[in-house]
Every structure is written in C-alpha cells, then in structure tokens.
Image 1 (spheres, rainbow, N blue to C red):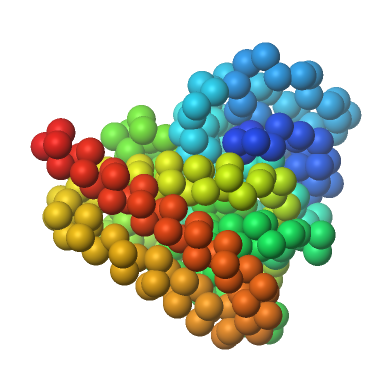
Image 2 (image 1 turned 30 degrees about the vertical axis):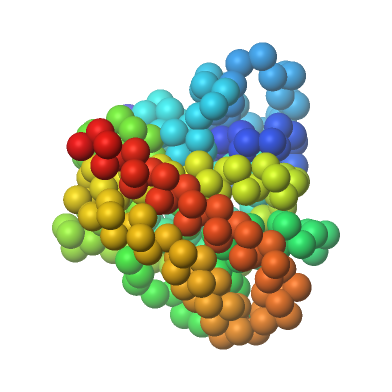
Length: 291
C-alpha cells in the first residue's frame, strides 16, 4: 500500500515551460499531506527548481503530445489512491489538496473546484479562460453539487476508478470519456463552486489558435470513431459551431456576473471558437476517410 495520500500530476503545457509558480503553489497546498509530484514534460528541459517539502519525479513525454496524453503518463505511474491533474498554466490555493481529498473521502469518484482568472491576464488569456472554463466560473455562496462533468485541470480522482478503464487510459487521460463511463455506472462527480485554482496562461494568440484547433481535431476524431457520430453532419454543421459556442459562453459569463470579461474578450473568443470548429470538422473528415 502506498504511503502517499495524493499524487499530483503536473503536465507542462505547450508554450509554458516555467513550472516554478505551479510547483511552489503545490508545495504550499500539500503541506500536511504525504504527496508525490509527477512532472510530465519532454526531455531536455532545464532542471526543475528544488523544493524541500516536495517529492518530485520527472516522467518523459513526446514534444508534440497534448496535455491529456501527458496526464495519462502520470496517471499510469501514480502511486497514491487519489491523483490530481494540473498544468503549468495553473497555481492552486493553499487549501486545494485538503479540500479535494475531503470531497473524495465523502465518496466522490472525482471532484474539482471553480477556477479563477489571474488578475494580470490579457485579452487572449481571458478568451481562452472563457472557452475552457465558462462552466466553472466562481460562484460564491453556492453549495457543492453533483454534476456530469468537472474540469480535468485542477481536479482529483480515485485512481482505481480511472484504472478500471485501461482502454481509455491507454490513450491518455481525456477526462470527458471517463466522466461518461462514471455516469453510466452511477458514480458521483462533485463540483465545488469555491475557487481553488488560478488560470495564468502565457501563450500568445497564434499558439492558442493552433492548440484549440488540435484539440478540436482530436474531439472530431473521437466523436466519429468512438461514438459513431455522423462525420457529414459534423462537417456541414461547422459554420454553426462557433456561434453556438460563443452564445453559450456569453450566457454563462453573464450568469456568473462576468459579462464585462466576455465582451472584452469577444473578438478573440470568436476566433478561438472558430479554430475549434475547424479542427473538429477536420478530425471528422479524417476519421471518415479512415472508416
């Protein structure tokens, strides 16, 4: 049996190699817990900063791999019964690990808190934040609730529950696929509306567009190959996807009192949503040809 209470998997995000702020926040957040930290990044990077209170282990990943693929490497190597996922785009609050472990102890198979945006974030960072986390904006005063999805970034999971699906884990930790399996089994995912992490990306507009395109392409391939969606419908529906995405994001931002942020980021928000839609259609076309 592992001596660790939690394995924290930190994947280097594309274009953001500085891990010091993330690891420093993890050191504060795991004080009092027996934790291991697994840093997943391509070989040849500069040495990691040393932290006296962290047991850090590096795991190699391909340069072109995406974050969920890097998380998968970490999950397969994790020793603790609970693991949590991070990237170098985040810092976590001091009570992050304790709060997530407490939620898992109540029986949740996975749990995550709200995500806030760094005060210094520019327009591109704000747009990426809203595209990725508009469903998880801080909502003070709300109670924890059972949900169908939580953000894999900053979330914690029961490792045995995830390892029970080796077919999925072999492809990486694409959390939405695991959430579908958990829901089918009647397992509980818990969302905590209190912010437990801060999003602080440093990626520029061009790199953000390329990355969302790549993620959209993976999503399109998955929808056609794994879930048997019609490739033709996905391709023909591509022009509507950015409209639906942006409208949904703006509505969520307004509900959370962040409409000003959405309006400020609107032009970049539209571009990033279009990049996702183009990637999804390209992935659907690729999967259609393979089929």
